[in-house]
Length: 123
Image 1: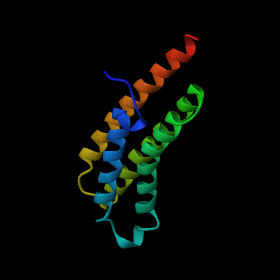
Image 2: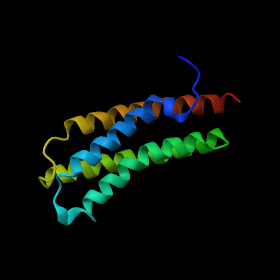
Image 3: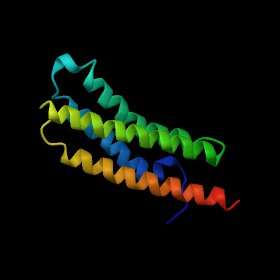
Image 4: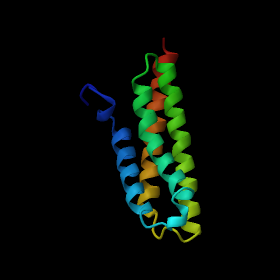
């Protein structure tokens, strides 16, 4: 694996950006009366994942980076919950792909956090 030039080189960031794009597309079909409610919450949670990965990457200390990755993971779990609720309310039909992207992003976030933690623990 080559040297990372930017957070944009991180696979977890790329997947979470894809997730956010797809969330925006799928929520276009949600009821208009939810635009300021559930639709807005789903979209904000989806954007929070890559945004926190990027913000953490830009921090000066690994400890801060790990904290931001934790926030990203929390937003990811929030997003999963909101997607399940929207599906249960029959606002979204098939969330299989979105849930799969959430799982992939979650696994990658966990690995990245563990790897950063190991580096911090070894110093």
